[in-house]
Image (cartoon, rainbow, N blue to C red; front, side):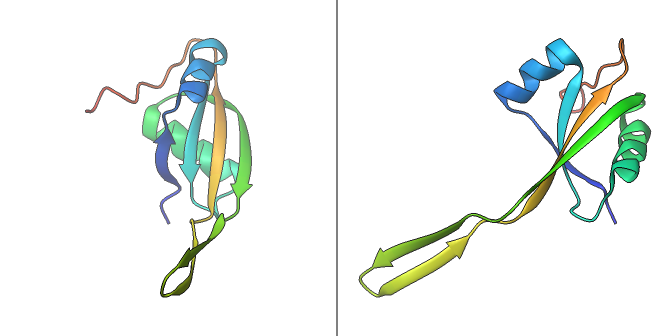
Length: 96
């Protein structure tokens, strides 16, 4: 089971990482906070102080077309906001 799926790189999370040392990740839905902490410490070599998680459900939509109604939904996902120790940073752009 891969715990970390991808980092979140948005304006809000980037601003939060510059000010408060908090970084966002999309993580596996079955991963708990201890597994997330261990995975980030192993992948990026930083010490994690706090992990906050949020579960997002799917967003459903209906489209009315000539051939009938089409139903769709987005995927559900789990988001983790990780606060690292003072002085530690995570550079997402180093391996591009």
